[in-house]
Length: 149
Image 1: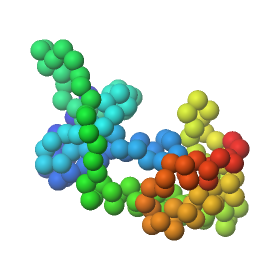
Image 2 (image 1 turned 180 degrees about the horizontal axis):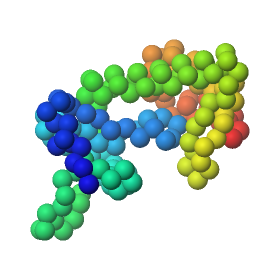
Image 3 (image 1 turned 180 degrees about the vertical axis):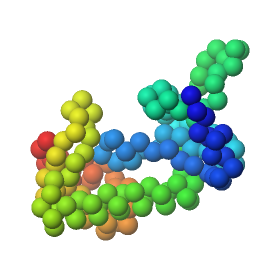
Image 4 (image 1 turned 90 degrees about the vertical axis):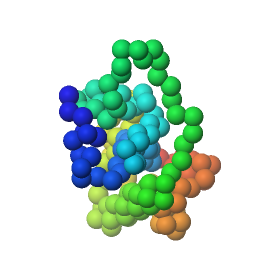
């Protein structure tokens, strides 16, 4: 199993691993100044096993338990990266609307689905209005409530 963090350390000052299989990207892990931050240890373990790569150091013989991070914070760069990902997502939806193409997405427990871009267009326009900033959960739920997959 390759240790990606060690392999690319000479090339990178920092890295962030996001999962984008759900409605919005979610930070799983990051490394800055040689310090690994794990936001979702269970998902990171799944990614490591599935992709046959390692981000975390292997457990030592004396390691009896794994503890999850107590806090969550975004650096300026991480926030900018998430805003850029949300804007790109919105751009794809509106481009597919113009071209008459469905938006292909992954849904847990369903798999790959085709979503009519007309259903996602109000959500995409709202993302662009706020320049990629996260929407309040209630507003996001309302904008996505009419989806039929």
